[in-house]
Image (tube, rainbow, N blue to C red):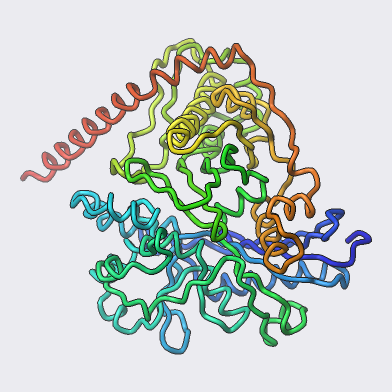
Length: 510
C-alpha cells in the first residue's frame, strides 16, 4: 500500500468468485485478493454452491487482502453479494440446502404458472422484482411442491449475503437491498408482505429482520482471528451487487444511466423512491433508504462474442475476431443477429425468442458474423434504455465492464445510445461501491458520490466516447426494425418447437 495507512475493505461475494479490495482512504492505492469456487450443476438447470465452500473462500480472500495492506488500519469492512440466492438453515444455523444461485432454473414452472394466472403483475408492482425463476419466491414455491419435508425442517430462509454476515458477525439479519430482491418484500411499505409470504408458504418469523444497507455490525472474535482483524471491526451490511455497481461507477444521478457489460448486460439508473412498472421486466432494488436502483438486464452480452470465438475456427479468439469485425461496415452489410443464445425465460413473455442470424448471404465473412453479434447485443441494451427512459429521463450513460475495453464495443454502444457516453474510469466497480457505501455508513462522508471519488478520484470523470453521426444513422434504422424482427424470431421459435414436438410424437409411435 501507499503512504495512506487507513483503508476500507470492500468484499463482493459473486457467483463464481469472491473479491476483496482494500481502498486507501485518500484514493492513492488499493490491494486486491480473489478466490474462486465452483458453480455446481447436480441436475440439468440446477445451479448451486456449497455455503461452507463459499464462506471459506470469502474468509481466505479477506485474509489475503488484509495481509496485503501491510498493517494498515482497516476502518471497516463493507459487503456486497450477488442477489436472488436462497439458503435454508436449521435451528442450529446449519445449511439444510445448498445455495440456490440466481442462475438456478428449477423454479421455471412456478414462475410460468404465476404469469399465466395473472398474479405476476401485482407481485411485480408490490415487490419491484419480476416474477422469474431466479427470484427466491419462485424457489420457495418449488421447495413447497417438491421438498415438503425439508421445508418442515427449515428454521430460516436466507440469502447469500445474510449467510456471510452471520458468519462474520454472529448476527442473522438481511438488509433492504437484498430483501427487495426476494419477491416477497413490499418495497413501498418497506416490510415483508404477509400476502406474498402466505403464497410462498413461509412465515415472517422464518425470515431475517431487515436493516438499512448502512447498518453497522461488529466483526466477531472468531472471524477476526481468521482474517487478521481486531474483534469489533465495523462490518457494514451493504447492498446487492447491481446497485453497488451503479454507485461504483458514480452513476448516482437520476438522469445518468449505468450500463455494465460482461457475459450479461444491464442498464440501471438511480431514483429517490421505489419505481415499479409491471409492464416491463425492470427490477427495483434499494441502494439506501432514499436511493433506489431501477433497470433491466439482458442475458446475452459479451458471451456472444466468446461463443463466436469457440465456433469460428482456429483463429477465432475474441480479440482477433473483434479486430476482423472492426473492418466491417456498420450494419454488417445487411446481416442482423438476434443474440439470444441463452434460452432464459424473460418476463413477462415467458421464453425469449431463439437466437438467429437474419439476412445471411454467401458474401458474409466471420467479421460480418461477429460485428452483427456486437451490434445485436448493443441494440438489445439500447432497447432497455429506450423503455427505461419512459419511466425516468436518462440524458447520459456511464459504461462499465470488461467488454468496453474494446474500441468496437464502445463505438457501437455509444452510437446506439446516441447520447453523451463515458467509460467509468475505475476497475472493481462493485467493491468500490461497497467501500463507498461503507465510508458513508461509518460517517466518514455525508455524500455517496463524494465517498466514491474519495476512494477513486478518477471515477467521476471517466473517458468520453465519441458518438459517430454516421454510426448513429446506420443504427437508427435497425432500432426501428428490431421489434418486427423479434416478432418474426418469436414465431420462428414457436414453429421450431411445434416441429420438434411433432417429430418426437412420430418417433414415439409403434
